[in-house]
Image 1 (tube, rainbow, N blue to C red):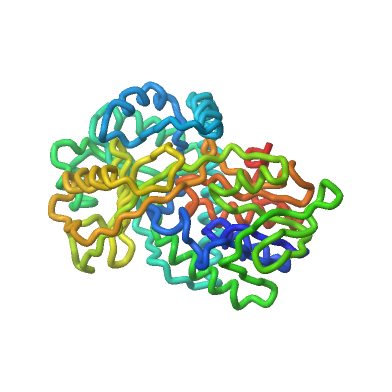
Image 2: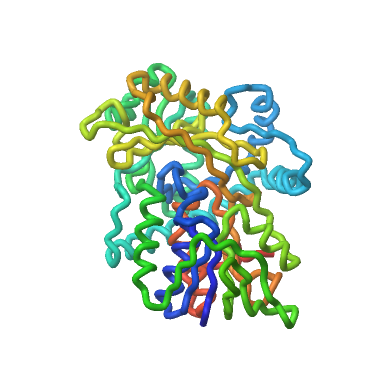
Amino acid sequence: MHITVIGAGVIGVTSAYFLARQGHDVVLVDACTEPAQGASQANGGQLSYSYVAPLAGPGVLSSVPGWLLRGDAPLRWRPALDPAQWRWCLRFALACNGATSLASTASLQALAYLSRDVLHALLEQEPLDFAHVRSGKLIAYRDAASLDKARRQVAYQAQLGAEQQVLDAAATLRLEPALAGMGASLAGAVHTPSEEAGDCRLFTEGLYERLQHMGNVQCRLGTAVRGFDRPDGRRISAVRADGGAIATDAVVLAAGTATPALLRQLGGDAPIYPLKGYSLTVPVAPDDKSVPAISVTDYQRRIVYARLGNVLRIAAMVDIDGTPDLVPERVALLKRQVRESFPVLDLSRARAWAGQRPATPTGVPLIGRSRAADNLWLNAGQGALGFTLACGSAALLAAQMSSLPLPLDARDFLPH
């Protein structure tokens, strides 16, 4: 089968790779001239398989009014004259309940564990260099109430196969002395030894390089998609793109936040909206003990820290404003909060970045056949978990498109 994959971020590149491995002829298309130029470029770097609770959860809505009044809020919403934003926010609000959150967590956990297994198998065949470490993860809490709530989440996730331990402050510091800068505000942490980290851009670039050496793959980057030919009204026969039409038997939309606009050309839609996140990439010396060796999430401030070789990646915040702009005030806030926890960290050479994460209201991605066309498939909406879920999402999609036994129950991920 001739398959056109639209999007060369981590989701699109992994999709193209696993489809090609199944023997399909694949054309990978992206308007950017290099892979991983969108949300995959400088994300948090955590491969967070055991901690995948969605943003929409009980208690979030009650926190929103306070966040809107605070300049240092981890979530910022700027209402726009954009019906898509309001529809997404309404669906997000409806998903902020215990039952939906638990169901979404279970679906994401299953996909995350599949992704972990697929990635490990992939790396046995393709030894990619992307600063990959299996150093574990700490979720640090700043008050006893939050830590108690975390105990309940740990107990629930244990039923789903997660192996985690709740630590008090002293035990946390013994495991990761670099957190001493948090001082008395550190109440404790959840430790997950099996978690990993890596550079998503380097991973995507490495896998893209492998694609270029596969005989059944064409890579057409710097090629914008302009539309679709659908002569019978149901099946796409060609993708209209710069440089000429691409005849195709099937199309995969893995275009991140651009997915809804492409779908609308075919009369469809997807509940995907860009949630802007920020990151800092800070050079560090190999023997620098002042930065954490273990991947860390500061729960209250929603800041993640991951050491990736000779850099520390710091990522945070959710801006619901529909723009890709890097807002200086938000970058300054992030730097200020980082200095409070890591006072000796030199941020003078930090590179700031903002990226738009393609998120669904529930946090559960869309993986499967679209109703907009008989031969159109989606792999989009992974949000902040794109790197974590990429290999599992691609493996699930490839099995669906190849009519192979599915590696997990796909019903929760099917587009509606």
